[in-house]
Image (cartoon, rainbow, N blue to C red; front, side):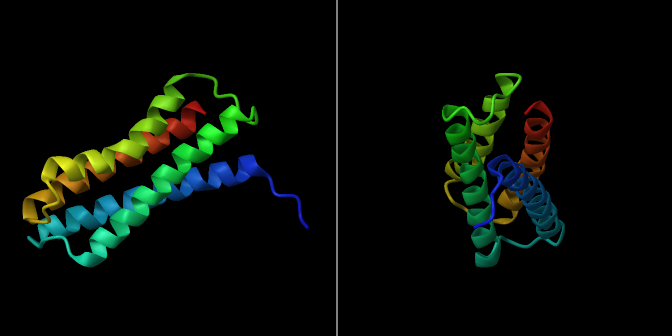
Length: 124
């Protein structure tokens, strides 16, 4: 069995979150500019984005608690917590509505998350 580098997987998961949140943000803004509501395809991708962010948060906690990683700054954990809580908070704020207005909110939030993921990668 090949040796799996857990820190490498951790960094690839961060990269996946980074690209996925950017793609979702662009998609959402594109929907807003076309004056379209969010469909089931977008909501499904949003769930995948949230699963990625939550997996990254849990993965970071496990690696930290086992002593495999030692972040240089405590703000790294705040970024990870924000990554895991932002989409559910927005969903609660919008009460699950999928109208034209919400597409802009999700687009701006996902671009914000893209920046948060980038900052978390830089502070790790």
